[in-house]
Length: 304
Image (cartoon, rainbow, N blue to C red; front, side):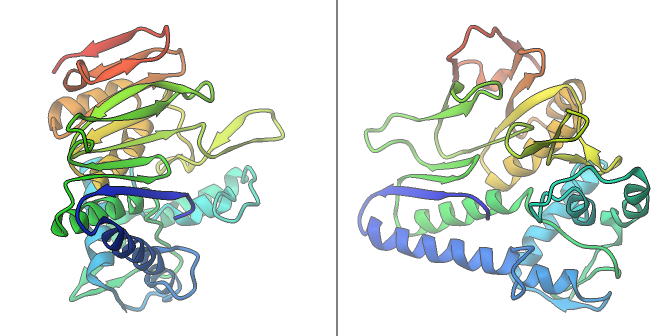
């Protein structure tokens, strides 16, 4: 999953349960990795248009990603992988691709061409899937589910920028989770969480400088094939499901502040912290009493 994973839990048999959780993380990584030649996703991407049988985990996550693509008019599209590769974000050889190359690849970005049927997925030749925008959130959900099933009532799961908590802290108080300041190495503020996930996406997480001196980050707009420049520096999403947080943090970053807030008002299934490139913080109303800023930046509360 290309990140550090840390987990802590309190309760009977917590150590044994965390060992099972670690095994689950490795299992999901083995199935969903886009670069592992033995993974299901790799087999789909190299199928030449032939159906490939997939596990229930892969089918569940891919179905969710495709549903999110439809709901958000393609702001998140799991078929973005060929374009992401052209930018070098998956190979480490980062570069600004020529517009002609992007023009050739963009027709391959179309979630509507992915077919799932009878436990198999069919992907047209030339297309490729990348579930990186939802895999860590889904993994957090699965780990949290496992911990609850084993009787764990207090746990913290961290997968890079994804944090998921089970219950509250062992002393009964809410978990306090820092939100990264996109303009510095410190925290922008602290969120209070209980039985929730919080996921942050921002241009500061994975980027490079082009020969033109501009910053290019890995969050791409599927419609242009270029880094999303929506006026946002970061978005943090809070909800009961990690997969939803993971997907929406990308979606809202691509949409921008106004469209993102409209989506929140229509959905009301999540809360969010928007940070603009002008150093402004916007909190959806459900976080008004659950976010404490560590900065002089003023936070504006957005009502439904």
